Length: 185
Image (cartoon, rainbow, N blue to C red; front, side):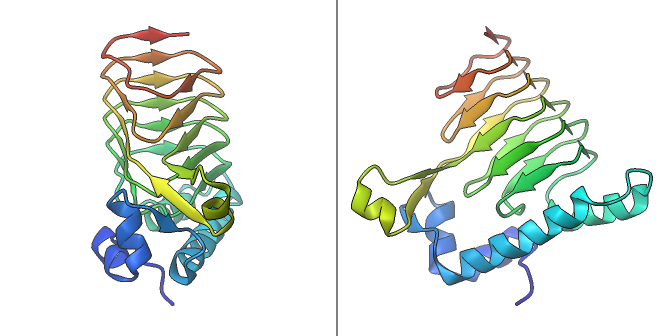
């Protein structure tokens, strides 16, 4: 199976992918979703093990991993689930050990700074234990507007918008929207 590198291709491959993107409950153990995550993890591994001075290989690998981004910088180690659901404008910087669980779209405006060990988690598991054991999940988008800065060890949960120019201090868990130009510590 070729890894779906466009959003449209990704959506048509599986009913579970369509449910996931449309913010409906879906099963993360769907065969197609498991295959795509596996292939994406291989690309993450390839990117994370590129020689830092080999900018051509790093750039080419990043384009395959994150096809809907332009002019961003990503430090190793970087991890994501699908890659195709991540959209980032120029000037975005992801520091070391950023993890993005992109079951839903994650949108980052220009010049967003993401600190080390940050987690952007669009996906959550079902609250009901039986559904959780069966693999049911729900993914909701994350929007980070231009010039926002997330410090080290920040966690952002699905369904959140972080406004333009907002600053999120180290170690904060963001569970609700953040107004533009706010400082959260």
